[in-house]
Image (cartoon, rainbow, N blue to C red; front, side, top):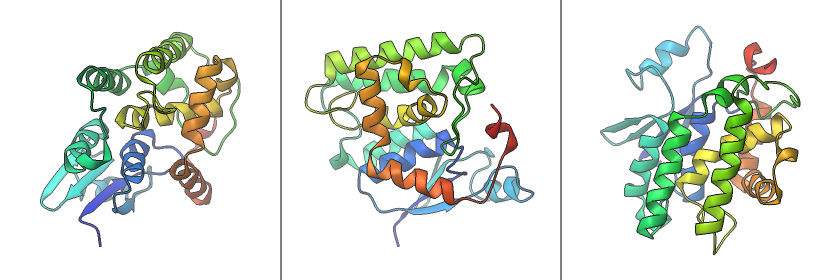
Length: 220
């Protein structure tokens, strides 16, 4: 049994859970997975058993507990240095951290109006005020990272890193809501790169097998 335990929510809907899960999978690090479905009578108590913050994901590693997706990614980068979860180059690493933090704290219009739902096709939904600006910023950010740091691979910084884990749920949204077709060639290629990763396909398959349905996420 692995000494890493990741507590996550529904794979159909939980973008924050997907981020550290994908990083662990891409690092080929063994870990135990615990899924706590959202909006059930037992949800709050189950999550409280892992973190007083009342949210998932949560990473347990021995006596260490880390909550919050970005904090978990930082911890994994230190714990798994061989995995290259941040770029080796200092400038690239600084930009990767900056774009990850921007995802973590920003794009509220997109996240609120286009909630993640990997099981659905919701083209044309969620185009509320501010969403187009968020989409444009994300597209520009992807283009800039690829142009400056993308040599050596198809990801934002060439090789897969934590920044890609942070934007993988955005790629799922772009497909769910039909945004993918509006991107430039580089943006569409990046979405395809993320969504065709074997771990992402595994995530989708597990999401489709889940019995839980949250109506709010189905009718965005």
